[in-house]
Length: 356
Image 1: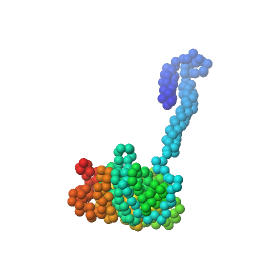
Image 2: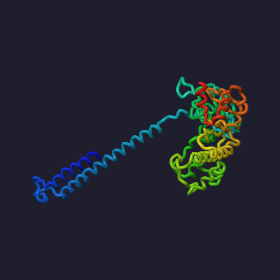
Image 3: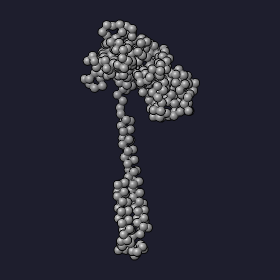
Image 4: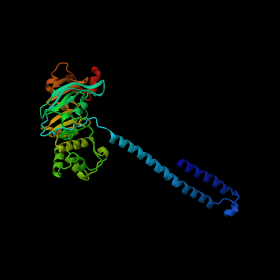
C-alpha cells in the first residue's frame, strides 16, 4: 500500500508538474478555470491532496490488518501453551509434605529425554539434612537434569527419589516446590520494581523480612544506592542491573522464600573475583542449616562441600569430600582440580574433551 501511494504521488507530481510548467491545455481546461487554459499549481495541489485523502483510509486498514495478524499469531502461541498437558501430574491422593528436614536419596535413578538416549544412569546417593552437595562434571553430563528431577520437573523412568523417606511422586507438587529455593546463573526478573520481584518469592512477607533477606544476601547496600531504592523499576530480565547485582537479588529472593532445600546452578560462574566474594558471603548465609546442591564449574567454589558428586558419561564416577577426591591417584576430579589450579580458565568441558 505504501508503494502504491508513493507511486501515485510521484505520477501526479511528475506529470502534473510537467503540464503546469509547459502550459499544456486539457480538453476541459476552460471549464475548470485553469490559467491560460492549462493546469494550474492550485489544481495540481488539489489532486495531490485528494489522492492522499483517498489512500489514508486504505493505509489505515492495511495497518490494522497487520496488527490483527500479529495478534492472532501471538494468541495462537499463547493458547498452545495453555492447552499443553503437563508431563508431571500430581496424584489424586498426593500426601502433604510437612516438617521437611531435607534428607534426600536417589536410588538407581535413570532418565532420558528421548527414548534410547539416556542422560542419567544408575544414579544413587544419600544426603543428610543440612549437608552441602557439590555436583561437578563436563557440560552435558546431566548436572542440571539431576536437580530438575529433584524438583520434579520430570519423572525418572527407573528408580526413585525420596525426601525424608517420602517418594516425591507421592507428595503434593506445591508442597515440594515451595520448600525448594533455586538460584540460577541468570536469575529471572520481571519488568517491575525490585520490591515486587523480591516479594514474588513470598508475597505475604513484611517489609522488615524483605529487607532482612536483602541484607543477608549483601544486596541491601546496592539497592539503597539506587535512585528509588526498593521501588526502582527493573527492565525485562533485570537488564539494567549488572550480572553480580542480579545474582545478589536472586540470592535475596531465595532467602526470603526460606527453603529447606537449596539449588545453586552455577551461581557465580560469570562474575569477577570481588563480586564473587560478596556473592559467596550471601550464599554461605543462605546455605546455613539447609540441604544445598551446588552445580559449579569452578572447583575452588566447592571445597567446603560435605560431598562432591562427579558426573561423567551419565554416571556418578566418583563421590566423597573435596579433600578425599584430590588425593585419589589418577582420579577424574583430582586431575581436573590440578589443571584448574594451574590454568583457572580450564573448565570441565575442556578437560572431558581431552579424556574422550
